[in-house]
Image (cartoon, rainbow, N blue to C red; front, side):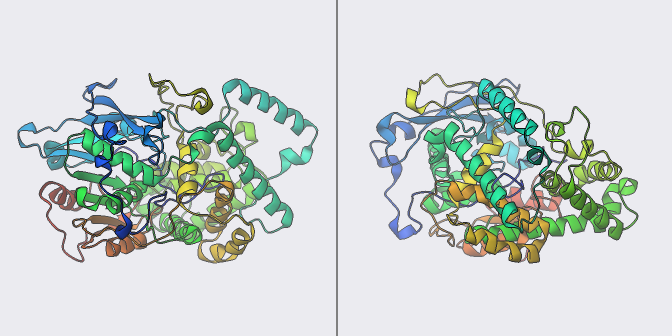
Length: 546
């Protein structure tokens, strides 16, 4: 059985969004400088002393609660907080229950509580579901968190801005005709890319300024420890997919002796800097698209948009080139209609995103590519469409007026992806390093690399946390299990190998296959080994492969 679709990892969205994820924040990077147990601090005791008040969720079979955490761990007593949704699916075998297992589905920007209500517990093996309550939460600033991130104006403001933009376009043909290149070579193209990135950063500062500096992974890991205590667990059992590996790594570094068992599937290496991350992941996407061309017939059958790998590669390249000259046509009801069609960046978003679950996505991708080549990119633009979720509502606690942020959209994953990535990973303030990174990125990954570099420009004007790229420092943590997929597009296998080596007694389970992450996608070997580790803490032998 395939698990419900996971949220995208950091680096998954090209274009206006940031492309990196790592741990970050004000906590010192070395274990020798770790502070005393935060639960013993008088100003944190009210948070650590919480007990969750469970009630039935809107979805049958799940229970929901709210967790309150300090907005600023340096000043937890100032009255400013995040209130985070939590959900759980009770153990199916309560007589042999081990405890709670907390997971993060990825992102950053994926809501854990909502993913659980959508059936994410089915991603876990039967042995784990029997012995653990499956628990997840919306990280600070994400989804139903109060307050939540938004980089968008309120509805009335948005309408006014849209009218102003329409008027500007009427007086400037160039404004509407300009198409952003995937490799900005000229001064004009680079100036336009930098300006657009600056505007995106300013929008987030304007609409979420008071919380932007408080949504990093380091603070989210502290929230995870508050959740552990609120669940009544002495030690944490955790599974993180994709970005969730960054969250788990940060937790292990801050609270190594509070880990019972930890699985990190689809790992992100915290030792890479921003440019190394771009090259690592964009090269992963490029390899995955090549895998699609080579293996399309095996998985998508007759729907493949070419008779052989060469024809498929040529079609994709042809679409990129067309979209750079002029947006690809779409139907009037397409989300891209208001932009005049799909530009090159939009096409470059759609194709790599279809590499996450080949068994589900390659057939619709193939049909969409064929129709786009024939002049209709509507299906290509709809590949990542998701049903809108209900408004997450507001907390009962009132925020002080100066801290109020606009009501976030039902899905604020885009804003959270950018905010967390930019805060977590230091970025240059000067433009020169970005332009210098273009040629190496082009050499390593072609347009996937150059588009990845320009996407990082948003982070140039962003507040940064206190961490720097570093190797894992988690002395005292028990053996951590890292799962790596050899054909993973978004979190390349090499990063899983590296992360496993960085953990004391780290273990690596290799899954030889395609797609993003491994556990929960139906492979019996992966399920058996991960479940045995989570339930019995059975170690995985060196070189273990499924």
